Figure 1: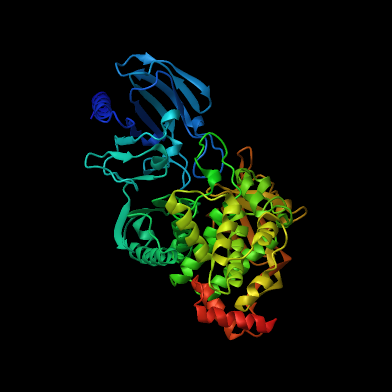
Figure 2: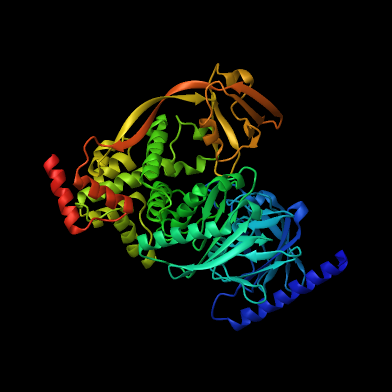
Length: 619
């Protein structure tokens, strides 16, 4: 088809869509009229998408907003990618568009409705971005759809136009026979990622729900049957643990690129996950880990939600003190789900627990920054200095550990009759199912006290709001475990690098006088390759597996964009690692408490009573 005929066809389709919306508006005069979007995908090589937004009759003056953040707790200013924007009334007469700030516009003379057209550049890869290229399109829609400020609650109708030949669409929002995607409001729409391309897919039922798996990758790089088998186990374990399934259908979207990858983004009815293809070929451990985490988010953060994140404000930072719970305790739940699913065993679980304790203890900032402060400071994570160990801790890391010790504290206070499971189920029943939101850390404390019938204010003051050292052995003793500090000689590359979610691996610190320093590595350099492979999430594990004296080869890019290749020998350093081990003598009561803990379940009345008696005898 010639460009002329293609444009004529496009204009005809858009005109028909506009007439349809007008008729729909007249037919539904008693409810908010729908807003229509047509997303035009005809410039994949240039990564350009054109959007037409059709506004129904209403106020003569409208303000239009493109979010400044989405998916990550970072201001990313998606307005920077808008090439042009223009508007006209329903008769086709041009109306003025006035820019109010870098992400907001105003139109006038729109009382009879208006048509807004704009072009936006879309090429941010990964589950936290929006990307359009000749291979596929993956869209977090908040990053390209402008909304009418006073009409976020209005229903929406979305069409996708000019898809390349052979491409099809997957989204947790089901489309009608004519390709319409309908959402009750803007928030629901942009919480529904869209994959468009030649992906592979599978469907299955589990725990009474229907599941859709979408994979954008070379089929030679993964085994769909094995992935689906793992998903069955994760879903069954999570839904039985929460005794709940707040959806009819759910979509898993996976990307397995060969380059840098890693991470997942949760949504209320779906998740998008990206992992390196070589990593999942070796093992599904990384896939089951991130999948269990993101799947549990459908309860924790998407439905069991802090009040400070509601309603979402797309125009500025949304501060909360509760990310240690919403993200970190989700990681606690991830471990329990994988244990219940049989995807890891007790040793693997305790090894990870030791690694998490080591990570926290090795960051000097754990003595100066609380879990609540780390949650508030999430908006600084895009800055390299902030991620340095003397400046910050991770709310993921400390939150996961707080979830573990809170579980043990609730068990101890309730004599084994309650656990973290009961805390989460109580919050699900009293907040999520009632459409309510919890009051950050105070809401978590109240929930834990409701099931344990104990005063936990000291716990939250010391370890959540405060920076007191967590006495690991005091908590772990009830399950027959202790933490032991072990001195090891470890390889030392001479630098510290951090990776911000799906961003590049950046050098945050270089040890003065080290081999890395003498080789020319500098703070702010971006590591492109390590040992001839693209730098990715697994690069840290690769570094830790090297031996002192091994030759390290890296390719880096300076802040000014110059690329260079560096080589130096790995050094060594003494480091304290923390391992979780059995007590020298473990009682039957402690073993019973541990068995229940590893299952993520409270103890029966008989076993709980026995454990309490045993604990009292030890004292």
